[in-house]
Length: 222
Image 1 (cartoon, rainbow, N blue to C red):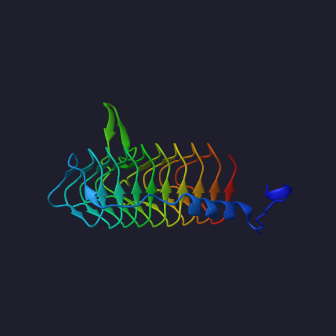
Image 2 (image 1 turned 180 degrees about the vertical axis):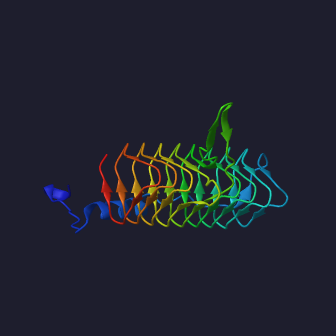
Image 3 (image 1 turned 90 degrees about the vertical axis):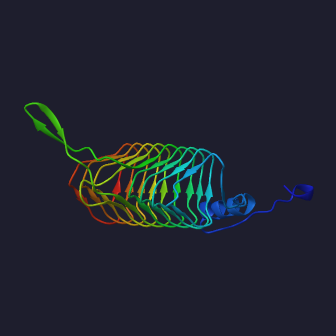
């Protein structure tokens, strides 16, 4: 309310979008300063280009970290990982060997990108582990929520397209392909080799069986 009970209103055709943009103006991101904490461990063969590496973070051999990227404390970045520019990797994230992240990605705490896919062959003596030798490729402008897991491919890569938004506690199995700008809500499980199209929306706790293909612009209820 203004003086004498007057009121100022902001009218917008997309109020929630206007609200989001106002928050960006009122609460700007903290200033960025490149550098490596003295407690961090960065392999001598890694290439860190104007990035920030936090306390007790580990960066493996031949890894590449892009300019403007922030790796927070207690993160683990494996061998041969490529992380693009202006990414924000929050504390306690694990990025497995050979994973590739694009530019401007955000990964929330506790996420694990590039753990082994669930590959086991039954035998009379028990389960024979099938090595998972593929990787994970993540596009630009992707956000991955806290404690979400994305498994590496068995031979080919698991693929996450540009602009994909993934909530907390999501499981994406090996060799899945998620199309550009798809949004996945919390506790969704996607079994191995499923293909999800572009601009899809998967509601909370939805379960997608393996080897299914879902076309573009599909909405799956929670």
